[in-house]
Amino acid sequence: MQVHYGFEHTDTIRRPIATVGSYDGIHYGHRAILDRLNELARERHGESTVITFDPHPRTVVGNAPVALLTPLPEKLEILAGLGIDHTIVVPFTLEFSRMSYQEFVLKDLVGQLHIDTLLVGYNHHLGHNRSGGYDELLALSKTCGFDLQIMPQKQLDAHHVSSTVIRQLILQGQIHEAEHLLERAYHIDGVVDRHGAVSDIDPHKLIPAEGLYAVTCTPKTDKDPSYDATLSIGPDRKLSLSRPDFPLPSGETTIEFR
Image 1 (spheres, rainbow, N blue to C red):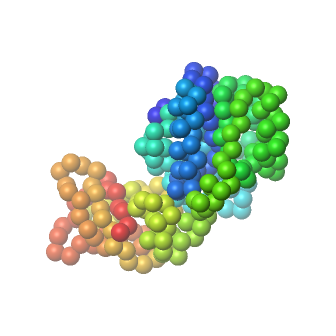
Image 2: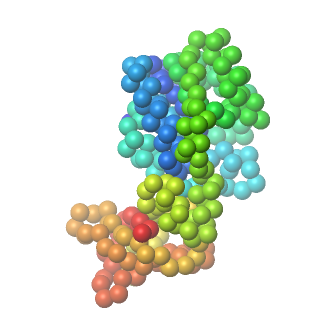
C-alpha cells in the first residue's frame, strides 16, 4: 500500500475508487465498506483509496483529544493488510474543518485526486456542519463526472457497530466484548524493561481501565518467543508485566489481550 500525506502528487493513482472517513479501529462495520471498496476497484479496473484524517477530527473540533483504538501507524498497517492500494492522510486542522463539502469535493477529490468513484455509507456526510449528504453529493457527482456509490442501509445495519461503543467497552475493561466487535485482539505496542515496566506507548493509544489482564506478549526480535503474562494497568497509563518464575525479555513488544 502506498501512503500519501495530503493530496499533492496523488494524480498518479489509477482511477481512484475512494472512501472518506476516520476509520478508527477498523472494526467489522468499517471492513464491510472497505471490502466493497476493493470489490469496486477490481470491477472498474481502478485502485482502492482510503482518505482518512490525522489527528482525529473530534480532537480538533471537540472539547478534548480522542484516545484512539488505532493510532495512525497501526491504522495504516491494518489497511495495508486488507489490500487497500492507497491511503491519503489529510491533516485535519480547524481551517480544514470549516471547508464546505463542495470545496472539498471540487478542490481535493476532483481537482487533485481525480476520483473515478466515491463510496459512502447511507448516512455519511462530508464538509462543514456535515452538510454534504447523499443527495447533495449525488447532484455534485453528476456535475463533476464521478460515480457515487452508496452502501445499502440493510448491509451496514448488519454490521452495526461504532468506534465510540468499542472505546467505551475498553475504558470499562470489557476487552472481550470490544474484541468481538473488532474481530481481532486488542493490543498495545511498547518497550518492556527487565523489571516488566512498559514504556514508549503511543500517546494517542486508548488504554483500558485500571486492573489486571491476561495477555500474550510477542517481542519484536526473532530471538525471544511469545509468552503469556499478567498486565497490570495503574493510574496515569502506568503499565507493567509480570510472569512468575520466568525472566521477562526486554525490548519492543506487542501486548495482546486474551
